Length: 367
Ligand SMILES: [Zn+2]
Ligand SMILES: [Zn+2]
View 1 (tube, rainbow, N blue to C red):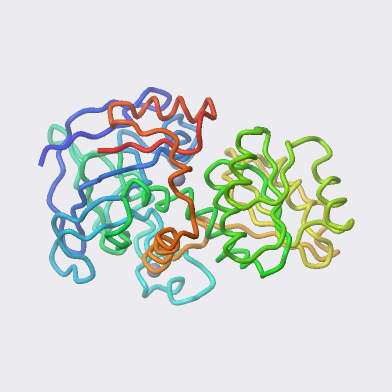
View 2: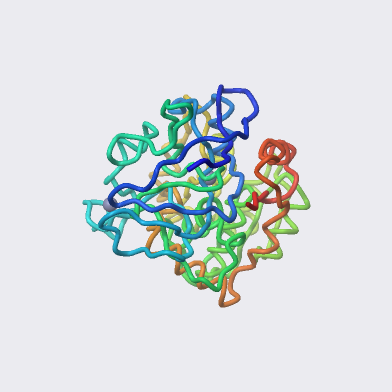
């Protein structure tokens, strides 16, 4: 079928919205009609050419939500009309990592996905007979996509698909970091560095976990106001003395859990140093630049601080994304306030501009 899609032709250039060809789903795959797709920093990161594993041409987009319109042979867990969230981190349920409760790092299709192919090593996308690669196994800046069954999470049909889109990446990443990576304990103190969608997700996840105090740090007063709306109890505009301030606010010790959601290695260092002596856990969520490293004074570790991190917040997508969507439907998560701009597919480059200007929390393309 012919579909419209936003193609990354060349790194550093605007995306080109054009008609491309999409083949039918093969065995174990499904055709999804996209209804909404968030514009995430990772799309911009790849489009800019900064991502060392990036490739072009490809169809970008990975924060999608839509409706199953066709399934390939052998697909048993999805049916026509199902509402789904796309997963760049699949959950096969059978590999060594899926069988462990400790991680979401499914290895089933990792190699082919990393190269821009579906699990059988081919593409469903093409143009003029030439193959066009899939981005992150998702390619959701498009009217339709074909994805593996194991990379689609079936969610409640009661949830608006616009609101489901951020659960495909940014929002679930932040919430999951608190719930599934750090496993925040009830009554604890958390500190979140950076209050974009991922950081706000960490604020929300800390609140859902029953944290007593949630300290939010950001350069923008507006984002700190958003953090308060979602559950932050204390906020501070980021400054050189932020670590000292957090220690003072926590009886001289630091926070039980800290989260880094900016991608700056300098802020990562602050998140480690602001974690509590003896048992503080610093969780890295932000994506650092190519070649950057995190400096930690070993004394911080010897005195009991721990450092961890996760991709997609440690969320096991097919199992836990539907659970998070249900918590939104139950009124525990305010999703609507996170959706700042609604764009058409033709406006996809405007979504990047809004992100670079830090205008709003999340732009969502509505098809
Ligand atoms: Zn993303
Ligand atoms: Zn797996």
